[in-house]
Length: 170
Image (tube, rainbow, N blue to C red):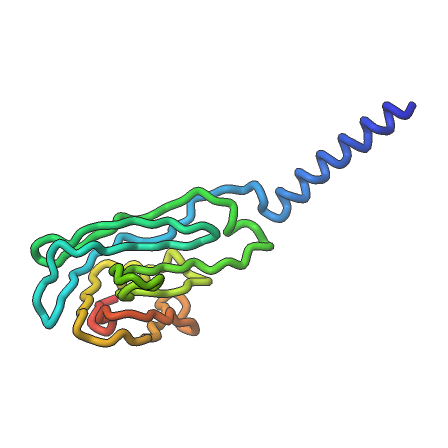
């Protein structure tokens, strides 16, 4: 009889744990867009900066790093970055997505071209538009710009860096 009770308890705990996990989204993996396509140009006093390493760091629970080198016209590009994760479906997850595009200079943050923390609208057309045509001028000081999210006008993206965001057509 003890074996039957033990088996019943084990089955109950196993099935209730799976139901609990499924109910709270712990096993429901789906594609998650860490970054839209990034295209930009790196300038110094209006002149293209060639052969410069540009780094993209995307942090969402763990860090994903890509590197590219600017071409002779100062242009750089990062492809769209998708991951498969259960984090967005997990009601206990409250991590923001950090997007950081920078040049190495011996400091942890580097020379910041683009930095933003996204807690909503990671798949935003506003964000896609901003990332599709970055003009990053090294002679200018970094600044923080609040960009209204077209999909949710009551919210903004706070973006810090050297890229001219006001000229981007959304």
